Length: 566
Image (cartoon, rainbow, N blue to C red):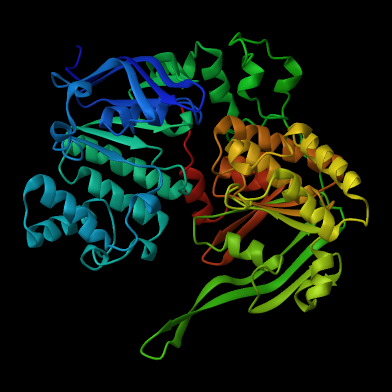
């Protein structure tokens, strides 16, 4: 029995005017959402997913955006024919949206409770007291602890998961009929992601609302969506039930997306990418060579010489308060951690946000000073080195950060970015020779040498991350810490970067500490895995043992939270 349609998108085409041409961000897209249904909208960055959602919300900036053609019907009204004055009472009331990044969606100078209350006062006509009382109820509903206290918090005082729950509370405040979720779990660790997804399902069941769930990760929507729409380069390429999409994908792009993400129990020698399934220039399907499907066989590196030794490392941050800012306690970000890493090995560090993974990595490199403990790199006491000695040591120890755009100077060309470490740490050679080295580095990470004079903003997220890897390789390091270095990337780009890291490790005998909240990714790349919780390593073993036979309840909880797919 067909359910009544709530939303119908027909032949939607959205273009953006650039300096010399019109670019189609959405081209001829059509789909329906029934009452009470969840539709998954998937595809890589740039496929047109978010633009489609903004068109539904009436938030396309015009100019430079142009809605060239199409219709968006919502309960008998074509939203594209309505004026802003007519749309405003619907937006946030009957149709609501959760944006990807809560920190940029929440005003940092206003308390979170007041921001949610503002929606209730605007759309429901409540006074301030009524709106705050309802906000407390909503905070309790979405699982924010101590809601009466938390309504007075500022965004920076809350964790990423809590901020996302505030955004959900704001979106459901008026009990909308349609909730649009634009990548609401992308930056969250697996346990928080699972909690948010379960919360959305519970709210949908209780309120009877429909959902449009946008993501680049098919695994996330497997247990959430009734139907899935796949977008590629502004076009809709496949639409089917979730079960059929997962079990019988028809389009090569869909097959590629499904294969990109590492899965527990299916560890290939190399991750397949979209380019393995289709010719991206023609869209034609490829036949995958059988050798690309070989299982990964991890070498035993337990007899390799020890490169890094960490002993009883502690990094504590003071909590200051009171009139005179006295120290009232300490946050134990890293609390008595000990482990070794052998040459050529990859040690994965996993755990929820705030467990101490990043602080541990930064402390090892002396980007954060330790409170106590010892760090030995190839027999050298890292923590006792002076500035000059540390500068020399850093040529051997590098880091790749999570956000490639934030870690690249937007005012510097790629040539300047790569020449800087070559000048600081490299041999005394001519500028021409350094440029030749920079070209070789770009080509090593899969970019072209003629792109040297471009700026970071001219590259995609995946390309910027490759530039960061090239910069780390510039000084010929032996050891690299990868700090959430693929977490913000599309699954297909993520697969390419992970394959690249493995190739570079084999070529240069690199040693990695790979920090991530994504356990599936760590399972693919790591030889051993350390599980962190509250500043401590609670379990450390081979990747195989951690994933097949976890010993600690916390590890079991993390593994249970991984999206399984169908």
